[in-house]
Amino acid sequence: MSYCETHALAVGYSAPLLQDIALQAERGKILVLIGPNGAGKSTVLKTLAGQLAPQGGAVLLDGQSLTDYTPAARARKLALMLPHTPRTELTTCFEVAAAGRYPYTGRLGILTAADKAAVREALALVQAQELADRDFTRISDGQRQRVLLARAVCQQPELLLLDEPTSFLDVKGKAELMESLRTLARERNIAIIVTLHELELARKLADAVVCVSPRGVSAVLTPQEAFAEENVRTLFGLSAEQYAALFGKTAAKPKFEHYIRSGQKLLRCGYTTGTCAALGAAGAARLLLTGRAPETVGLRTPKGLVVEVAPQFCRLTAAGAECAIVKDGGDDVDATTGLPVIAAVALRPDAPHTVTIDGGVGVGRVTKPGLDQPVGAAAINHVPRQMIAEALHREAEAAGYDGGFAVVISVDGGEEAAKRTFNPHLGVEGGLSVLGTSGIVEPMSQQALLDSLQLEIHQAALRSRRLILAPGNYGLDYLAENLKELREIPVVKISNFIGDALDMAASEQFEQVLLVGHVGKLVKLAGGIMNTHSRQADCRTELFCTHAALCGADTVTCRALMDAATTDACLAVLDGAGLRGPVMASLLDAIQTHLDRRAAGAFTVGAVVFSNRSGPLGQTKNADTLLKMWKEG
Image (tube, rainbow, N blue to C red; front, side, top):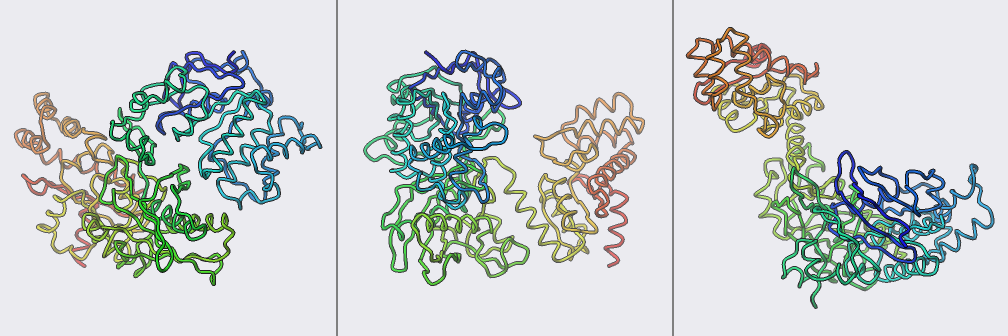
């Protein structure tokens, strides 16, 4: 008989992500949710636990709607174990596990002798009794998973929900976890629902399976049905060759499976060169400290997502060990995708708890001030450096090693790949930058472009308190031909990100900013549109029409403007009506108004507008003032 079941359940946040979910979990059985990351497994689990409200339908727990339970009553019925529980300060593992007893301790939270015995029993069940007095913040991630499972067991739930509990566990740890879950299900008659991304482990653990994909949620399947080749290939979008590589005799680690939505599409994320460097450092250190090359290495990225991959190689060297991790950019393929990021690690017993990091072949050197690292340093940004150091400290702690490490990061093919990036322009010579603030690459993200733009504006601020912004090459060409006297003022090409560029100029404390651009982009500013990409808005003809009407244009002229295909065609219509001058003046006034609003008094800003066909079209009042001042020196 089902202990937990759903009726026409819809889950999501502001809108349904998955609908018509009908699953059942029985006491004494283990139900496993499988499917690509990002498809909604965790969202389903959090809805079953009551952390997220259903977007539709109902969750029944022991025959009663989940919403009818008080929080305390719910806590005595179910426990949820998530992989990203925040770390606490100055708390022992016993105290963390004991938090699971609070539904039974009353308002003061005082543990009785029976409560303490239940905590010790739970820690023993998950083979974590030796951790009881250890600081929870100073144990490995795998050990932390065991303590969190013990906390869930302490609640004495009748339903246990676990989200990817095998993250960071080694082979022995995973085997012990499987044994613990089977004991909880069989001997304590607990219903267990668990999400897993390791199909071989899921196959061995599951009594029943539900498949979750962007296309929807399956009915409850038998393991034979769920793990049939055709179903797995459909669920994960694998070709026959990929399936054979993953599950044949030469099985390989599956690709990173986390997705984001972009419009109607689901796009696979990747991981940064910084994540690769940290994973490689961990793999090389583990080989040095244990004498065994790891089959996989994993870490939790700053974004909170777990990345676990198989090294391309991990081997001893004359100086220590080196481990290579191939960069996977997901669906955001760039110059670094597919390149091996190699971490060479040497032990430094004479330098306790220290980590020195440098760049090798294929990693660039900083040659200009204003970047993340000082001039002369390897272009390995501070977040990857922190990830590398943290990964090495975890390996050292797990092995009982008190010494330090020396790390050199290289990128095979990085010097050639760097020629296809912004690096030479930004002042990074000889190779790639090792980057990543979140550790994860989100496809179709604008963040990389904005990061580069921020660097260029920062570097310009080191030279001058004046700045020229040009959306594209047209603006650069116009400056070179018509405003040669301004060549000493730094110019930054900003693409469509006008509003972001103005915000960055404010943060860098520029005093005067001039925007020089083609009318096709800058006319949008008259409507307050600060990202001029056509995906954001394309109201050029509407703006021409509105301002023409304000200047006395008749219906025929307005209709002709609305029907025009380009801004040059709009100008031709205005010329025919004798209205170009007043309409451009009206548009320029509106542009100035919106620029002033965005600058918010941080600096003086103006705009120069031109057309490739018609030449100069005018400039705002502030642009007049700035140009006169700048030309006078």
